[in-house]
Image (cartoon, rainbow, N blue to C red; front, side, top):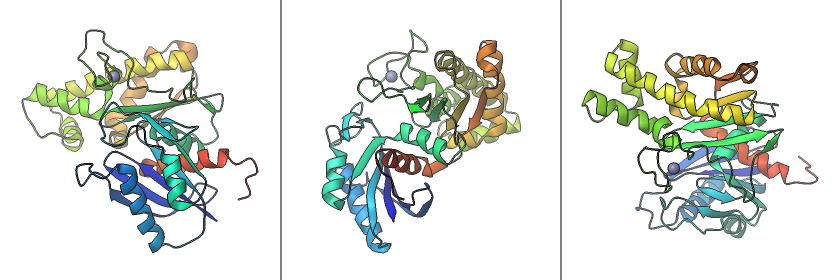
Length: 307
Ligand SMILES: [Zn+2]
């Protein structure tokens, strides 16, 4: 028996079939923003998932969803998006999926799902105190403390992109100033490299290639970016005392140019007792992490799991 796993992002939905061990057997992806969001992304995802199920017909036991934005994990409702995706906030994803597939559905935020996924079958398998940040357009994150996902009063804790790193920093879409995300995201790296080099149209690939070739302007910006990520993470390490910090997002593939220098800097900066045994690693599951974590979350809701 399989679970239908859906990772709903702002531009794309990833869809897969998973067994009870978190292995993804078949997968596909579909755009959800192609008509400029005239169709709500949840509807687009359901449509794509139905096509997927027609292609790989099998009996499913439930639907496990990882979704962007702030998600109330109890009701499966989108309770915040910073206004970025039209027709999304307020959607009850759980109810919509249960209507569409007539199977029990559980929904959680995508960064929290990625963290649960890494703890289920990925780099942090079996660990109990883990922080994950994903460096992409923004910064997502999640905190596992004592083996439990830190949810907070409303289930939306772990917005690791939105604490103030610089009080005099620029305004953030969340309404605050100088948020960590503004300094630490992959987009932030691109902006700072473009500003410093006077070039436009840069991306992560070009930037790391230039850094590798020894371009001093780019190298200086990459170093400054890593310093800012380390500064924010060191604060989080002092608060949560994790045994592992995982870095996700496309840029995390840069072991020599990002992960290693970041690890060295954090281990230097954190208070000695906090850096003892601390591991700073690249996340392992890549694009599957959200689906795998959603499956874990679904299984955790089954009182008598009979997989
Ligand atoms: Zn913010």
